[in-house]
Image (cartoon, rainbow, N blue to C red):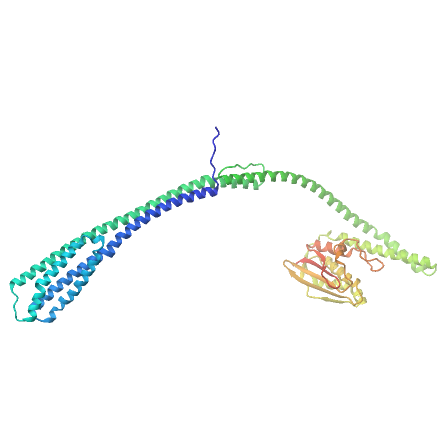
Length: 507
């Protein structure tokens, strides 16, 4: 037969452990409560009953002795002030008997009731048979003599009082000794109960720690080791399902995840291989395309320069000598050559961005803007534009490329103007580790639907006979900004004109 193994979850194990601890704690609490109750009873009997009774008995003995001393002094001296000890002792006697009467009602002082009654009876007999008659006789007849028989009788009666007091003291001492012995036994019992309870708790804690280690800690540690082994890359190492039920279920889930990750990694490896091949092909294609653009634009310079030069020479020499149609054709040829030359120069500059890989340094954008405005000075004078630039920061980059960005943005602002005089505003704001640069104008603006199209190379929103240009400027701005680790975009929320924003890393 297959043996089934009972597996508890971690929660069930802790619930069982808490139940066992609760039972042990309850047993220890009940035992300790009973021991403390016995201890409290013994201490109450000793402190609140027997000890006060012993003190009251001592006070009673002292009061009776003072009474006897007062009577004897009064008989000898025949002076009334010598009765003060007797009167004071009488008051203390009544108080002591009242206290003893109250305490003797307790069960612990049941043996002393008879002795208290005997002392009270002997004291009353001495007082009624000797003390009071002697005091009365001395008051009515101060010269009367006390006979030896009367004195001996009084002494005998007070000896009876002393004997009764002695028996009461012995009884109280015996009771106090028994009570203290009971108190010591109760204290010893409480100590034993707490020691046994502590030992049981230690044993139970050790057993629980051992069970916790074997049933939970070791399986969890083994699971952790196996998971870390998988995390280090050993995805083919299986995970054992041991320990409590929920730990085993967790191990099963982790192993299922491992298998799935293994399958995903296989698929990802195949996809990465295909992506690497495509990336290699794309890099090769981009390199060839950039090389072609550079070579084409560079090699076209010389023949285009010849075409433009000879076409302009033809226009100057034969202009006005041919018919009107010939002059128009020559003008078209000159204009096309110029625009072709400008387009090739822009394409050459676009292809050079990021190819030189010169080290980036700290660049003062204020100086870069001054250089860009110097290149646009003629256009600024013609348009009577106002350039309003705030304080610009220092960034990391290549000065020539950043100057080209600002020159293109300001140049576009001066080109696409409306009826008003151009006003260009340039501002900078710190955003974390970057600077946010904005360039806004009051020109004709750009429809937000063309916010991405304007950054595509050769994309124009207006005919070339309305606004000059090659459609490369903003594409070059995006390429330069992204080459510096930033981004550039058109702000669609501009109410009037156009606002371009771009970020650059701070110096």
